[in-house]
Image (cartoon, rainbow, N blue to C red; front, top):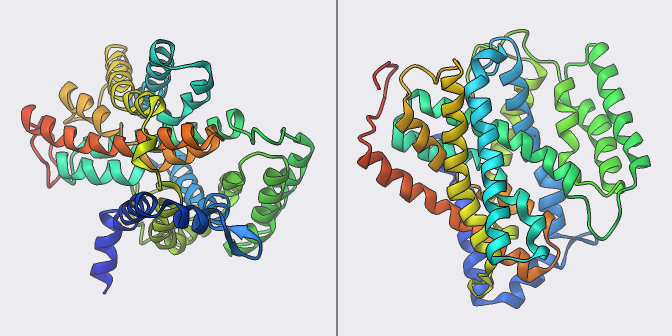
Length: 388
């Protein structure tokens, strides 16, 4: 049973299944799908609200854990100097898609599509990790490079959501952010008092943070992102990204260990509630998002990664220019976060649906990656090696 569970999580089966079910349901019976997603789910709230505003709190919390661990001593982003190249590549992976989206919109789009510029900025961490392992092999340095990049640009994506995508119907009410600050202050006090159980941080700090963001009309899914850094964590990290450190029993690692399986399987709900797009809704924003991801990510990551190398910040040992280019292609899979941002960027269901279709199409980058991997002669690494 455990092997089956691990297999399902490793291959992102819950998320992929949710996307497939949503697409089939939305196209075979659009009315019943819409009723299910937007109708009352529990105590006056819709299934869509439950997933995007409550469940996704934990999705972004797990991403925040990875960021905190990476920045800690011994983490993959500490000291910062060794992370300069992937961080510059990350900036390319954000600026490139924005530039391509805006340029393409000026040619074939319209002003009403401008709000979608943030959709192609993020990378689906789980799918990028999965495809990278197939293309490069488990132990290839490009896999860790790509994970660092994906986590960093998702962190930037969180900032973009928080700043640029408030509720367009309800203006931001900053006074409510004092409640979020109160949640952070309580979490700080809990840490100072030596509280090692993560529940008080969630129930006191997390709930206050969620209430503050929700009533301020900012996205409450980010509620735990500002609380996670207060959870007691190891003085030094010994594991790498998405690796379980069996020697660590701190509050941060316990939270990640106990909630990651819930998030992994809960992504079925996310796919189900966000990917239900009718194929008839393919439109201009579909191509703006898709090309922004596929071309913008690839060119941006390759360009700034190359510049970083020329400035004296090398790629990881065993990773060359062709691996950098291929990493950019794999990073073009926006899916999860791109779907999330699309829902925040557009209120018009037709434009939003078309944009979401572009996010779904970005999964095809996996096909391009497999083909390019063969054409470029990428050698898979199953054990630590420095070959290129």
